[in-house]
Length: 333
Image (cartoon, rainbow, N blue to C red; front, side, top):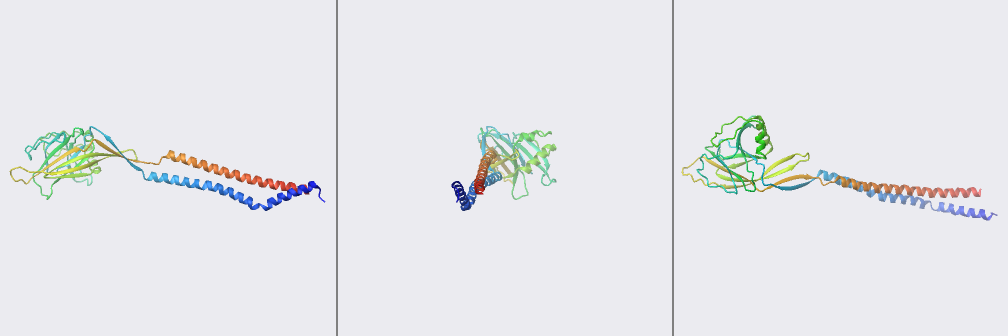
């Protein structure tokens, strides 16, 4: 017959053994539950990290266009390069407040009260054909509605349609500042080609390669209203582009004798005092992304720490059961 204390120890051992033997599934279930709880915290955080990085890369690839406007009272006078061919410049004058006085002796040589340059250079696309351009200083004072009015004359042509090509570039002064001497033309000067410095020739070749060209037809008055658009590139450089609104009015030729020649009239004026600036803005903020990722990684660290402590706790409980069982067995022995 067992002593009471031995019986008590045996009873405790039996309960411990039964508890351990009866609940192994619960222990494994507890461990699995701990891992599942940790996974339920970790997996959504990992997905959030992936989604955040994906969104950031997508915003880098597709920046948002930003458009701003700057008001000015004076523009930098643009350069207007005409390619008249056989046509001759009869008159050129600056007017204000959209007022152009009636024509005096149309078709006859008049005053050229504009700053002009004549230049010849090789075609930038063929490098063989020689081109002749007449460069005129454009209007500046947008508040006073300054405009430049020009009249060209073409004596005869072997073409079915007559037109004069022109292009605009952003700064007449930049063209003037190119080294070399190319004198200002007076109104009696003939359109003889004047050899020009290579710097100005290269400048015009670059302009023709970079800017679009337009036309205005004979027998009409073409009114061109200009606006300026600046675009900031990713490398910090800036490009300039002209936008134009053109209106055309028929010229009523009241000269008495029948004429086979053509008269060309063109007006250049600024549309408004606003310079448009276009810039691509990347909406992805790296600092916001870094802060969000830091929060996510902190959550991951907490989840991993929780899982680690939970596993340690389960191991400690199991060791305690095994130790009590071992002590009870040794006591019985």
